[in-house]
Image (cartoon, rainbow, N blue to C red; front, side, top):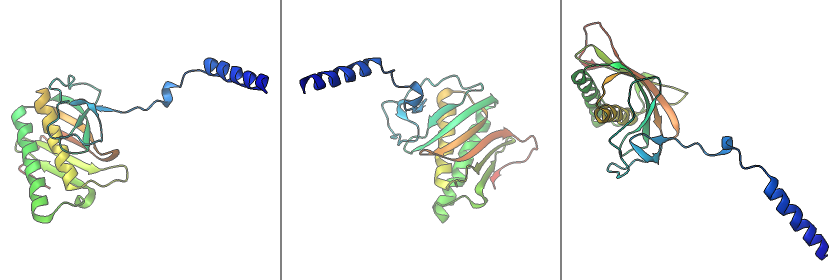
Length: 190
């Protein structure tokens, strides 16, 4: 019996030494917020977090930046494509947020009617956000997304036209963009 136990223990010890390390492809691949490197994207980011950084990566280029909206589980994957005037984009995003907040105040939070939201700023810039991946965005998530975009641009001190995806927790619920219309119109939501 002792020889069998010795044989079994020796075999197990050899197989443990000879087995390859776990594949890196099987390791969890959590994505972290650029503004809170210790926070996994899609988890609650406290409004006042000591993990916040004030030095986000350079915003222009083909690589998206993950940015978490404070006080929520909403995060964005943002790609800034070209420079735009700070005053125009602050006005656009402030106006869009006010429009969303008024909607929530007067009618309550709920799904975005028609699956799309547009807001035209005074300087020929437009913000458009629409549902994606068979998910539906709410006005509350839209408000968090707009706050997140503005927070990112203010923190990075780089304003520009952008494409972005909106995630509510682990689910991508919307996509959107900020662009110049060139049409000379503006001044309200749609």
